[in-house]
Image (cartoon, rainbow, N blue to C red; front, top):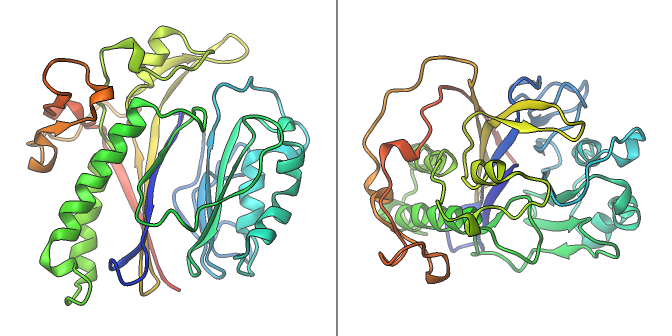
Length: 342
């Protein structure tokens, strides 16, 4: 059960153009490449590659600036896909292989023609496609028939969190992540050296921002109230509980064939694009098989006391969450970085 948080920025309002945080939840034994840019001969695509299906979940073409990401829609029954044109990983990867910038909505619509017309032949998919150099971004899904392409060009300045549910519903962990994301960005953008027109030290500012945003990605807080768990019809109550957090520690889940496998958040990715076209693409790949954990640390003051909107309040404490050290994973990771100037 993946989850993504992102915000686009209008020019001259921030030193950043796009900030995107993505957690990939998958079977921990499923093989993949680390973040790289030279897996496909003759192409320069920054992404991790799933070595079972040879697709990806998030990537950037470093020549054209085309980028995209996807999540599953969990309430659509899973089916075995044998025809390659109906595999969602290929849908994204084939887009990323295009070395010509794709910017106009009608071109995105043409590219997604099969998905928009025959969406029920795919497994449940939410997909975003865009271009980093031109600021374009569109969204499509196959949660029901007759879906149109959604142009997100007017969503600048708004943080969007999306997981694996219906487009018409907002999950607790999506709201929590959006507000944590906003809290980090608000504090960061309020500092004197990130204001528009100030001398912007890209390296030091991005490094500080990176650490706090990865903390958001690594939040393991789970609400105790079952009404706040993801309402996925195929999940057991235990699976709903375990999937109610942003970062999932390793756990057992049942598969469509009745067997079980070990799942968890296997990677967290962070894409930061500046208004000058500088790309910083980070990825942390987590070692759920290792026995050793990272040393604990004090909770960053920015997360020490946090309030959710009233409709998510669990108690009479006005929905306040007092984050503790145990509310953030300590699983060890390897961190990768690709930088590029568009």
